[in-house]
Amino acid sequence: MAGSGCAWGAEPPRFLEAFGRLWQVQSRLGSGSSASVYRVRCCGTPGSPPGALKQFLPPGTTGAAASAAEYGFRKERAALEQLQGHRNIGNCCCRFPSRPGPSASVHSLSAWRSVFRPLAGEDVKYIQTDGYRAPEAELQNCLAQAGLQSDTECTSAVDLWSLGIILLEMFSGMKLKHTVRSQEWKANSSAIIDHIFASKAVVNAAIPAYHLRDLIKSMLHDDPSRRIPAEMALCSPFFSIPFAPHIEDLVMLPTPVLRLLNVLDDDYLENEEEYEDVVEDVKEECQKYGPVVSLLVPKENPGRGQVFVEYANAGDSKAAQKLLTGRMFDGKFVVATFYPLSAYKRGYLYQTLL
Image (cartoon, rainbow, N blue to C red; front, side, top):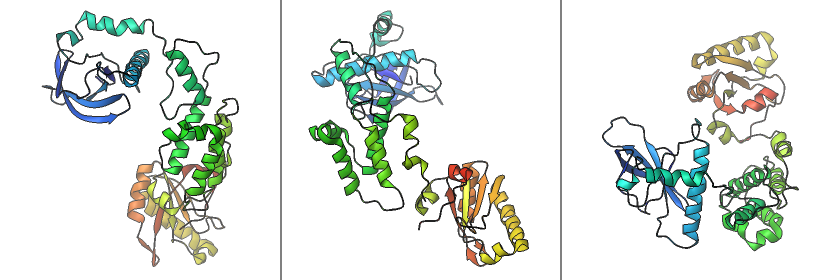
């Protein structure tokens, strides 16, 4: 049942008959502008895996909402059929009418014909989710619904637009669907982005927010030919210039690399024999929580006196972080935080921002 498209009423029944079985509707998983998804389980089969049913607006609905629901159902059904069998995609099993009955059974030839006839001749053109849709995708969708052909095809530039909107929403903490649709955005989107960044308080000044602002602007050009491509976006200073994460981030985000603070002082670092002994002691202690891939104790800044421990996986690192934090070492309380694996591998050692 996973990923099946359903055109039954706005309120789901408690039970649904399909595939010759009775299915119980357990809960609502989510809702959109034209559809809801419900969790279902087969009755009378203990231990059966759960499935999902997608309910579009009922057939009696009129106006733009009905058109959007029907169009969304047809394009999603066609896409799922084309992707049938992929391990990461739910299977589209069948379509159910608004009042399930004998004719809704998948054994009905009439139901099967209603499903497969449109698939043999439907050209799906609906592109991207509303609110994250690039201008050229919006135009192409409008033309497709009117039965017209577009002179240009959408490219991967539409994905950069969507990513730009997502980054801006993450930074602002606001949904921007209506903002992006406004005349003010169309007239001067750059000024709106500037206003968002000026009004949003940045807790940690070490994070180069202006790099993110400029990157987002380059992703949200209306003209796709001026929009930054993915390979250039990855070269943006926002991604390429290392900056120190806040200590709260380092505690909350598990990685295979653990950084131990407040372990070694200058006396240990300046005495080679003591240095080697304490490094061996730390390694032996850290190995209690999992295999240690590598261990680094810099003698110079940045990172002087800090202990970097790379585990085979984030699970071992998380267990070590929990048990090592607060432990006493030579009269000092140890602080253990996670550390970005990519920065560690590239030799970037940050100072701690408290």
